Image (tube, rainbow, N blue to C red; front, side):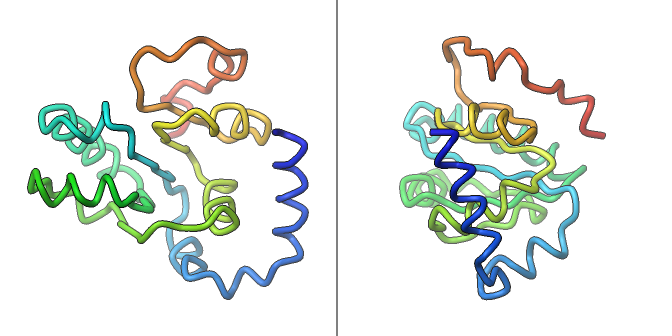
Length: 150
């Protein structure tokens, strides 16, 4: 998995990233957080989703958040009438290359899926996983504390 990540990073270096829809957004938001959120355990419960949205609003008061919104999440945002902070830039779903373009330089990656923890650790990008009950891995134990991001 990590060998493919570094291969994809080399491929990205050859890419004309100025053609990405997120190019200007990335350049104008220094120190941003890259967020993914789609797990049923996080978005299918109004109470849980409200709590996460509240926490994200606190973070967004300090740093911009770039959030490609998964279709499941979009549906639940609308169903529960959850309003996100204006400092959370909601985007349509992105492909892998454009997502990598964003999260490789993020101040923090906040996913609720499994794949990011090892990839971000390999790249030295701090990662906080938005999910209860994750098993411990070396990459999770090596995660940077939140207070080192200020």
